[in-house]
Length: 212
Image (cartoon, rainbow, N blue to C red):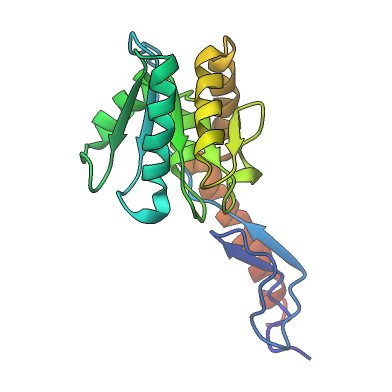
């Protein structure tokens, strides 16, 4: 028999269910537990006067910033008063308190990455009732849908520009942010994440304890 037959759940922070750990391990059930986010105690929904996109990322190639800048150039031609604010290493680094303010005051988060694992900034945005535009990479499509944001192909300037314009014109954009907030507050707060770890570890440990 397997040396690890008691292990019935794998806790992972990446969406990789087709894992091969050892030849003699049969993975009966995998459970993904993402990092949680803090839910603001007080919601401040005062927005910038002009439509503002927000991107929080490192200034590195896989984050797709050149694609974003080209797309925003197209957006500006049709919506000259729109804004794009960039924060993160390589741009302007800000405190958590300042980040909270930026997330509240923006109208839409843009995640233009060429590659991602599980981008926590999506949950951060939704915790502040901010809708998202995100590229379809990594685990993004498991969370972003037509109710809480927009999915676009990676490395596609035209698709990103079209979607950013669509967001500006969308009178129900705030509803998307509210839907994202409901998703995160019910499933991905720190208390929910801690409870998921606790319950999963109990299930893992039970068959092991029964041996003794």
